[in-house]
Length: 291
Picture 1 (cartoon, rainbow, N blue to C red):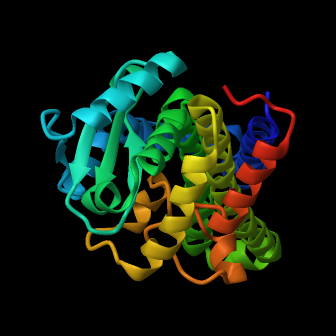
Picture 2 (cartoon, helix red, strand yellow):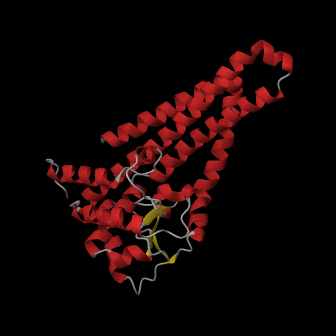
């Protein structure tokens, strides 16, 4: 098990602890259970049906195999090597180079490429990007992020419950227990912020792990390194017309890329691309045999 996988497990465990703490503050075990069930239902619906909405939102169309035979052949080669079913391939009519993977399971995997990526990347770079997206499918990252979103959603709901409970309390109750309730709300809000940051940290950890898995899948990190360098430059120069912050975490590169500001990186769904390239180069220089 890699460090990124261990890190993901620890972050998910921390999210669970935060849920227990905020649940106790808001309504004890009953309040915590209700919040978790509601959040789970919403996120499971998104997990099983969200990929259809995402493809519709980005006007993605099935990639014609006759025109992109080389890409289908490349995908078959990599999926056989990774032990994955053949995913469906889609084309997004956007000029910003980018790509994402979605689908509720490896057997229903989808990889979508923007027209800009297929036009601007060499076959070796496309292979690196494709392997990264297949790595997300292989590592079941969509399920991991759904679990994280479920717990964060539950924590947010509990904090809202705390705030509304203060609003509906009588003036006498506020006088008697006002300090304790305000303290609980403040603690809950801090926990909600911490939960969101942990969710983003999980997303960043999964990106590092997908980069690593992709390099091992291809047998070399060179194509992905070159592709990331291009993405770093072109995602800042070319805007994505239909980008949405709710789906930004799906893409191999943040479609809202900006300067390396500390707060921007703190609240980003992606690690800085220069850092990803650095880790891939470290991987290349280690004793691992990429095969």
